[in-house]
Length: 415
Image (cartoon, rainbow, N blue to C red; front, top):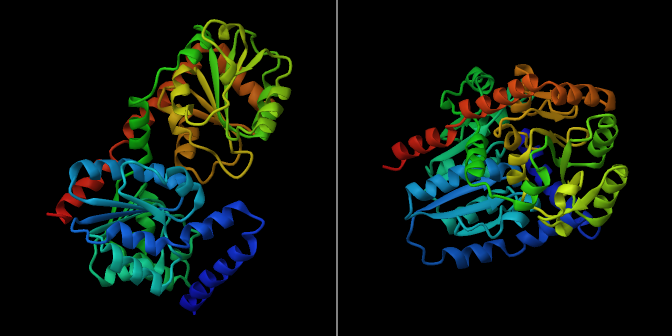
């Protein structure tokens, strides 16, 4: 029954997308991107004689987890052709020109026919599925063809269907995997509890990606001039609820504080709302700033995409947005620079956030008052600020290495 329900669910999902497409840009991209995917794959792999490594990511976040593995695999196995597939437009549309892949495309919906067709065309020598991607028909077909298939940076929770009495169908999906590399011991224990032994606690490859990003950070002269050797708060991936809390919570905090804001959305209307929230401060957008005069402003508002990871190097404190809405954005990019991080209340799904809250390197707040109290404490007490920052930096350092462990396993598989 569960298999029938799964098959029907895929069908209903397609119908729902078709109905939504005229009104929803994401749904339209989802369908348009898959329209000619098999024809595109045939052109890309026609006459190919190189072995193929297939990496599948749901969206952009999973891609960032998979990226260090993709790039290290490419270095170790330069003769392989690399295919990267995405489920979501938010991943594909951003990374469709990714230069470390030979082919980037959408993953066709998970049906028996689509799985057979894709594997007939691509014929991968190895496949990697990042974090949450467990597609029944694709994994079953890979197993049937004896193609090594790895789940990487996976994480599991007790409430998932795999661990329920009725979850036999979903447990069988996992049994198609050659090996599962999980982020933590809890996940490993859950899997061994349902009889899976092909499990390794390797950690989260996002830590390796963060190290890559920090090692390759760019100097930003305007941000450096803006900081002007003063204490600086970097606000990353902020939404309007975050801005409302921060702008009110910073009242009566020392005027020597500098603020860099890199919002999640950079549409003019969103930027204007941010400017209005800080109406009592001197604020300038990055596109209008100059090295010579930017130090005279209180707030530097970033109106472009792609600078945040480098901007964190100028911070003494960070606030990461999203946790008053759908979910917390990446805190590791800030934490690795060795500074305390503050965020909202919705962070329970993020292991690194839970860990660092417990270690007192990062701090969750529920409202304006809590933000004010926590930030004031860090701002006025250098010892507390440094202690929290050291905890964050050490945590990131201790959790790197997942990529190396996964590649070592690949070396044994691909002798």
